[in-house]
Image (cartoon, rainbow, N blue to C red; front, side, top):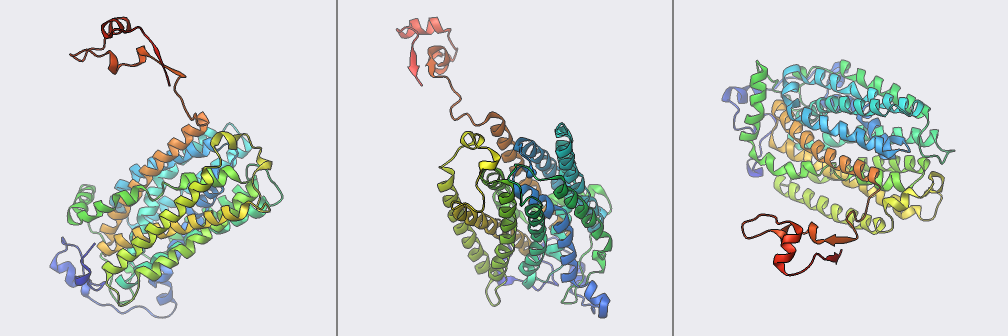
Length: 481
């Protein structure tokens, strides 16, 4: 993070590799257009439109995930689809910054939005044809590629459009609109499934989601070209001018070399989606019936709006040094991590996968049950934590640079590492669901033939059981496990 003592105005470059000519160009002030054009091209308006793209596409994807198992009874298919999503997401996002800078943010955003409709359509197909599991997983892999493009373009624009003093505010505007997708999607699912206690959502829910994602994919067509954006302080964006793919790929290395502190955020990147698996599948999907899962999901995404707002008030505090704001925000997130995970552990002690598997869908917790209250508040706090974590990460990346091309690399790194962690934990979840969690997978007894280290001689050779037993002076025996 740049030294706050030398914090510069937004119209100046914070990158060591910026030339003096770039600095002079960036310092030039332009007059913003007036009237309808001025309103339409305003940075807040464009970030709001960006939020609407994510409202319609990843927001509705999140609402399905928040219901647990993609709204299906068989959570294993959803878990495997998520593995496919995050595996290709991780691979694509690492290079998505180069793609974004070469194709432009609008086209990258447009291409990225196309995968969400396909993914939701695959779950509709699965509801109609239970044998369509392979289609769901394939659609997940395609979605991961698209998501890598969408989120890289989104991060670049969201962090480049505001002035330095308003970055957290712009993140909050985006985050609020984006998460309204989860709220509305979950509300639709709640209304569609209010009179059922079955385990999966109905076809109507998926059809509504599909139509909305198609609408969302059209919004980038109406956004202004970033090269025409004039910020509220009269400065323009530095539009990437790299001439070849070779130079763009080289830019990945340059971004790391000139801002090596980004590497210190990699562990936070890795863990930023790690908790979704437990929250969505092992808590919401495991304990509650479908209408209650939908209600919980709506409250979860609603809480995200307030979590982001809380962090914006902290991270954009006026007359407070940026370093102080950064550590204050980090401290708040740290406390929330402790509160949420200790609270979650208290509930997790009461059940296992095996005990949950024995419960019929109609016998799971309903929002009318007494035991619901404490558990739903935990889920709300989970939503708060997620938004606070992600807002902090985005703000810290935005504090490192004002250059859209470099921010595209940063957000690409973020989404790549985040997705790698998510792919690993979703795969672990898929395997454990399939195996129904064998608490202990070893035999009841350990035989001497299994004690390989004990049968090694002085030269490191592993002796046959009989020879080793004779040399050690005892017969083959069994030890209690």
